[in-house]
Amino acid sequence: MEERCKRASYVILLILTLMLMAGMDVVCTKFEGFYLFKQTFYYIVYAKTSAEDVNDYLTFDLPMNVSESLVRQLVYLRNVTGDFKILRKDDRIMLGLPLNKTGGAEGAAFVVVKVAYNYTGGGTPTLPSLDDYVLKSSIPREFIEKYVREPDEAIKSIEDEVDVYLKRHNVNMENIVKVAYWVAKYIMENFEYQTSGKPRPLKEVVARRVGDCDDLSELYVNLMWRYGIPAQLGSVAIFLYGRRDYIDMGVSKVICENVGYHAYALVYMPKWGWVPVDITFNKDENPFYASRYVTLGDVIIFGRFMARNITAYNEFKSFMEKHKTIIVEAYYDEEQKALRRWRDLLGLPASEIPEKSKEVVQINVKSRGNVTIVQKGGVIPKISENTKSKVEVIIREVDVLKVYLLGMGIFLGLTALSIYLVVRRLKKLERSVQEALETLRKDFEGRWKIKGDSVSVG
Image 1 (cartoon, helix red, strand yellow):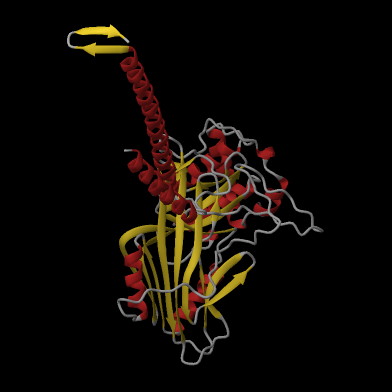
Image 2 (cartoon, rainbow, N blue to C red):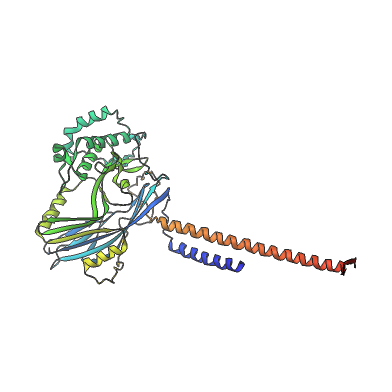
């Protein structure tokens, strides 16, 4: 028994050591709450163009790294092949397909996205409610300077109408939560959702009172700016397995597989940080209960920006109508399915697996030198111009399965060790008792003589 327990403890401790070596990157810098859901997505980008006389790149934004109180997202490039170039612009990393290569260009990229959500014990996200009170004066000045712009002239025609609506609902204009909620409700009640193949100018949105997700979100952001509240636009990809969109653009085509692209607004509230406000995709008509939480684990965060670039879209459309180009964007939640699609697009044999690129990039993560960790709900401190310090939030993978297995390994290892020590102690006690009994037996036989039915003292 002792030997079996000893062997079992050695085996479990060996497994535990291997798990510790494999799980060094499991925990994030500050583990806030418990991450109940973890998902991995595989994003494939493929592009081929006949253009060879354009001195520019066809660019593709990539998902961004995110570290917030409610969601963490880690992104890295597993493989980039063909003519794709990795372009860096400020803190962003994009893929670029050169348009001046003789005979045209072709490229593909394999991107891995890992998402973890932080939910409370009841499985509900910690979101603002109308009972919460956050003063506008608590917003840091640097956030107002960076994320509040002069509103578009287009909203002037509805400003009085919005003010009357807010007064009717007794909105305290100093409470960010109330203003953010009721301005969203105003748009939801007075504007009609209507899809569009291209972004509408804000003037058209206001005049016709129609718009899709990005149109109405930009209207909302401009109204937030009018009230001095930091806001920006957010773009995401929602994983929808089985969906196929074929977009014809003249001689070109864009194919989107297993995805629906979506946009919403983000409002800065010091208690929570950047809060998604979703006009067109929410739960129970609550704009704070945004698509990110309705489709738990199925949202990939792509980017944040202050305003839509309609000019860039028009330039892209003009290029696609002139130069024969095919673009494929595909999403999968299973690696093997993603690998099969990758091989199909590149015409590779069934046995070939994409190797890691020579230049593996963790997308949109700055260097880790001279780092200040920003705590949950904290404010990024203002950095003096004459210092080289950088401020960032370090992103690390949060893998709930690894954490669970690691915990089980520790528990089993300690349990086996405890059993081994107890059995060893009992064996030692057994030997002591046997030695004592043997001593008593010898003493008894030396003192007493037994003969037939009679006993005499020796």
